[in-house]
Image (cartoon, rainbow, N blue to C red; front, side, top):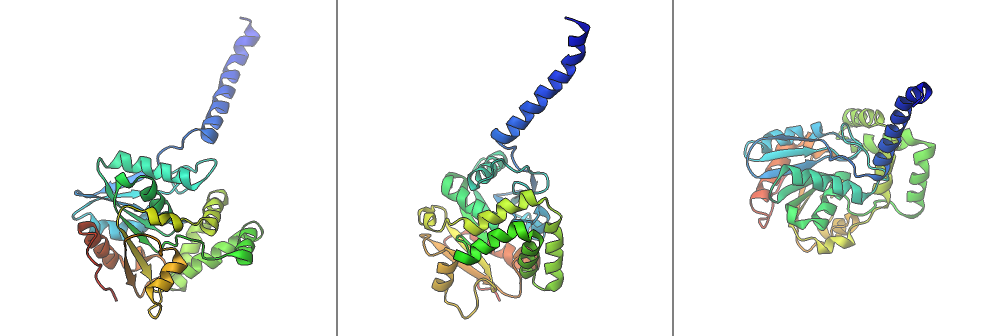
Length: 286
């Protein structure tokens, strides 16, 4: 082997490693998402929403951890969890399924917030053996905009990305100060990670599939999503809850979209009660 070939060998090996790594990231399975656990007892898995963080669940997690083992799972593309390429609900669900399998030997109480609830619901549909009960917090199971309005929002993601984020996340807050903080947090994220999640929320409809849901379901909604004067069948149709065979409901007032930040004690109490007896009606909250 000549001196020239010997000199080129490290470069060639490094290039091969880079190519192999790139191919693995593109076509291989994503790493399991980052998980954080606390407490002891039956397992409750908490999944945050788009642009959110596991830390947003901490006020609820601390309360649940008194009698449960609480696992906080990051959504793909958030903090330490890589984004699968290509991105899809199926691949996000696979990542969540791997996390649950690694963290619990038996079925869990699975709780998802907002878009994270879509992933949690799909996990319960695809792997009912892993989910003892499902809690969806401020989750719409079907798109909330259609037709020209949806097309305009999808187009705006490229034309005015920050404007779309600002309008959405400031509206999520219980007040203008919280809304500004929520927007500031998501605005720091890589748009390449955020856009696919927004596109998913604007286009994905799993409401009809929910008729096949096996685990019991509790839908927890803020008054912003389920107005006091609106009958449940109207809200159920709008948000995609008309088809699940057995759905319990709870409305929490005086809060924004991030119920876990605004009313953690009330939300923890609902989850605990449902985890203990999914057949029991949830307590009335004001």
